[in-house]
Structure formats: C-alpha cells, structure tokens
Image (cartoon, rainbow, N blue to C red; front, top):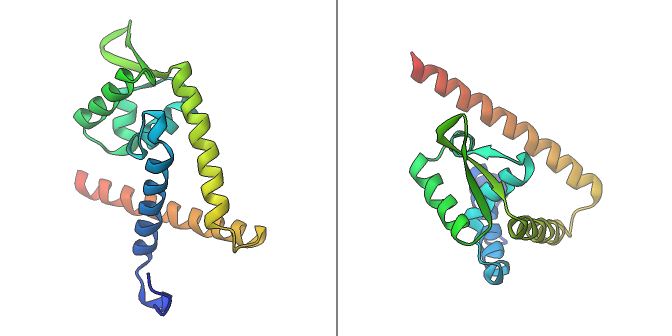
Length: 156
C-alpha cells in the first residue's frame, strides 16, 4: 500500500487480505526451523485450544474438504506434531491430538504471534487496540451472520 493512498478508497477486505498475507510470510520465515508452516497454523491452533478433535470437526471448522484436512494431518503426523487415533466406537473416525513436540511448537507459535501483534500495533495505544478488537469482533459476527444466511438460502 502506498502512503498517498486514501484509506477510504481501499476495500475493507483488502486490508484483511494484505495483513493476513504479511502474517503468513512472517510465520513461514519464523517457523523454518520448526518443521511446520503457516498453512498448518490454523489446524494446530484449533487442536491446541480444543484438545482432542475428530478430522470431521476440522473439516467443519475450516470449511475444507476431507481430503485437504487428511493431507495436512498426514504431514503433521509424519513430522510427529500430531497423533491420530481411531475412535473405538466408530472405526471410520479419527481423533487428533498434539504430541509433546506439537505442543512445544504451538507454544512457540503463540509467542511468535504475540511478538507479531506487538510489532504491527506498535503505533497504537492500549485503548486503540481494544477499540480495534471490538470493531473487528463486530465485523466477524456480521460475517458469520452472512455466511449462515447463505447456508440457509442454499438449503431451500
């Protein structure tokens, strides 16, 4: 983005997209030595926060295809970051958990994210950051409303 750009002429989604891309580049650079990538980040965070999940829950959470989730989980399993266990009550379903190595990597990623957030928000005070998060939370809620409306319309 150029300095002379008028922010009112920039679509909101462009800000999100550019920030997300910069975050992705930062994480990929910082995670080189940890045998993981920014593309695996959301799934790792979801497993970290929820503990034990099924592959199907990850598909539903991220609106990914079962194949895409399975490929990501296979890569993570091959790197000893996650462990998959067949559900004894439903042999077609796998539970996914972090290994101890995976938990250490996630803690490192969380520290990196904290550092990134501090750096990208360095020109904002605490009150401005709080207001920004409140506004973004409202946008997030509205985006979910739109998504749910579209899902309901597609059911008809």
